[in-house]
Length: 537
Image 1 (spheres, one colour):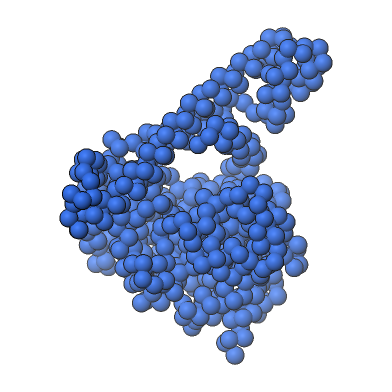
Image 2 (tube, helix red, strand yellow):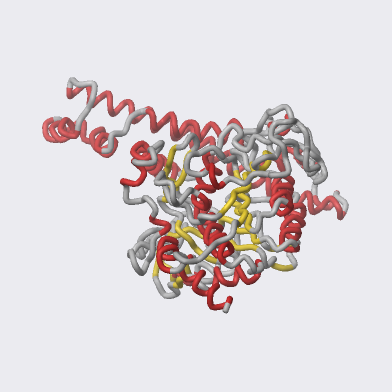
């Protein structure tokens, strides 16, 4: 990564950090006061805010209708099932007796009351950090392939060798960037401290104000460079804590994600290809539950309790499946989580995760095909790299064995609140073939652990909006099969085929919104329910 990009990353991190300080850990009453509250539920037509038209659907279409309960599985990094705004909508395994240490329903999982944790062991030990998949592939094959050439290998080894070379290239690039990030951060921190000390000494004050900077700009020309460097930091109340936050990010990369000597899976000790192995525990919170709680809240936060936010679906139960660590998920864990969801009645599975390579992709493919056979719709976040995933592979994928595209799968990109050039989120992956639809994913307010609330960006949060809309439609039209449901969601999208937006991942390059996905539109609960009603007659 070039130095300028790293510096811009630091400034972006600063901006988000300062934003977070004003919004993190807010209470249920505080959360309703800011303008981001509930925007993903609003309507482009009625509110001029480009949400998913959920409130409009409840107010105009569903007042006199009765719903049935829909089960949605959230495969993620952990869920706080006791959150004040979520606890009433958590799935309970009625065939299991809580905390008796017995597999009462003989499904292979002991005391799986609300779901299962696939990244832990029976002793209650849980994985928090993990390698990236490129790291795992590289270190697994390094000794075997480091000093060989392709013509020295058998045909059966060549495919693994090719995967190794791909992982090695990506790994070495990522490691180089991470080390540069650390170096630039250290330099940036030194420059910050030096310039602040120079100004504080000249002002004869420990705490600098904008008035001090303006005064010194006039009377102390030699500090011009230091003043310019400090101006926005002082203006927005920046302090040195931001460096601690950014250092955590850098150190996670180097100490865990890219560290070939880090082996967290040892606590499980499983075979990465043996799908029949039993492991894990019933702690669906785990070491952390931020991401999964946020995702689940979008779908299922209680709409009627006068607390926090309004989730999309009133009559829903969430199966909590912890399979995603801080790092890359493992294919077998995802495959087992999908199968668990299907076997326990989920009609929809939300998957807000992804990675660059998938060495045991066939395990996930088989699980997706199993979900298709059982009539389960999978909804997946497109990813946050600003890439065209028609060209750049992102896993998991609806392409099964490179032969055909599965039809029980929806991929979701992220859109913003306003219908302007930034309507498509700059970070969102896109693709005219591989991304089906967009949904709100910028400045989304949802749940944080311990009955708190937060704001975040990402296709991770666009996906559960589509999952929520899908569940809402199913709750009123339960006889729909997965093909009909998918068809309704895509055909009812509010389309903007000719609207010019900045192309995600590109600097000020414009593209028609319709070129970024199959539908060229954003999901609409109101329109989807209208279409479902027409088809139901």
